Image 1 (tube, chains in turn green, purple):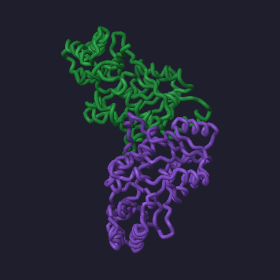
Image 2 (cartoon, rainbow over the protein chains, first blue to last red):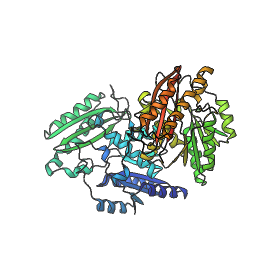
Image 3 (tube, one colour):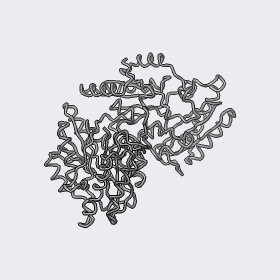
Image 4 (cartoon, chains in turn purple, brown):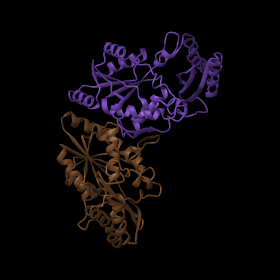
Length: 282
Length: 282
């Protein structure tokens, strides 16, 4: 696996590959890889002749009181895992190369980023869409893969790609879960054994919402209430939001006539976790 | 000259040209061409094997009380002028193709767009940088050319290209003036004969600022005052701003130790004109 640190070098590599008629799949990451990332990468391998991944803990998507400085990092282990996929090129830039002094350009997706996490993490999605736009221009892939775990991020990036006419196909990849149901996340590393057990309430609550849906509930409120009842059984969990919204626009809906996503954000001690499931009427 | 109306078709054309090892120069326009545009296009011809221009009167860069609906248009004449350069491809999309329902993504350059025209035309530069980002992703050029007449626009686009890592070289092209000094602009078509004569005060004022600079003035205020004194001789002119700021960052400066741009915006009746000159200490 080749490791490239400079944007201009990455662009040259990509242009040369395209010149040879090769196709490029891209999986951006913040590192501390787990099976979810590897699933994205394996799917990328299948969809193009070359696979590029990036590792950059993007400071602009963390709020001032969030976990940027303590976000888990393990470069050696990440490289070993990527080599095994195998990833052809890892783009791993330094922060001051990505945001040199004087940087002042932001990409803002205004509507789908308003609710859910956007209402609780000011500036988060602006940071995400800006860094992804930069990475797209640096890696210049044909295809880019994103996990459905970060559901609102996926919708924001799809919207950005469409609105700014990026010639890139966005491939959503389903959430990868631990055998007991916990959605994989680099932040799961923060959890104590007790918190790890309590964290199961998130996926449990989503299954409870799904049971209500299966039983015929077609008001988003009913799904939310089912999820909230489940979460209430674990008082150690501090719920940030539970919502059931249109799966594409993330707008509120009165009745479930198109697919909805039920999304949860909750804290276990200082650790903020998110999870979601999509339910589609026949 | 080939005319393309659809983004996907333009992208295919561009990818095919790149696949053949050709290079692409790009000149975006809002049409109603004059010698300034043609100078950009001829310079583009010299810098790449293929020349693409676009014609799109971009609604998002006009304020609600500005001249979008009456902006001068003459598609046939523009096509004839482009064919003569010659332009290889004209990209001329419809507004609803560029901004379909649900569009919600903005590219914002926050600092260099604050002063000068940015202080008087809310949302203007956001509209400019957003449409240019879209056009860059659609045309995918190696080189793009912009006139120094829209000086702040040029600086905002350079900043955007650098900050978002667009692999595109931005080439600034000097202002083209009428023999009597008036900077060429599509909006000059709005002027009555009397206004046309009075409009000369803008370039005259910039020359007066230049005379002060040549005489040793090194305080921006001195250049501004020289320009304002000149403008005051034409009471029909309503001055919006006269400023002398750092030519690169557009920040205020105390003393002229690096290049400064003296920029003017003024109204003649309903018509808003801008002009500028850069003065560089040895």
